[in-house]
Image 1 (cartoon, rainbow, N blue to C red):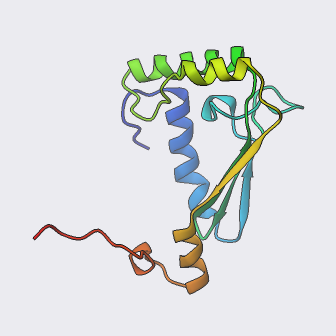
Image 2 (image 1 turned 45 degrees about the vertical axis):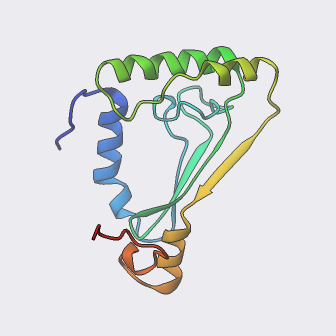
Length: 145
């Protein structure tokens, strides 16, 4: 397995999961309780501080949904943003950018919150029984004239 630099723990773990887990999820599969280092915006799991309250749904090797409980502790969020900033400084182009305005807003209070995202394009692929996303895009990229 080749992992482009920087070889951070988060990037290596993401590469391993992408190589050995995601593609094997042919039946609907929920990948749950992601490590904290992989989920900078997700709340730490209430029963295990090493993981977060997060899941992803995979069907046919494709990710359809990503969901998590929102982290609402400003100090913890700042620390995670700092870890992400360190990774970005080391060259990780996928690291989150620190958002101090967001942390200040968290200091004023955020009730327990959760969210999820579903790829409508992939859901349409599933319902239409097609294997290429190009077959379901309403506005495909057009070549310049």
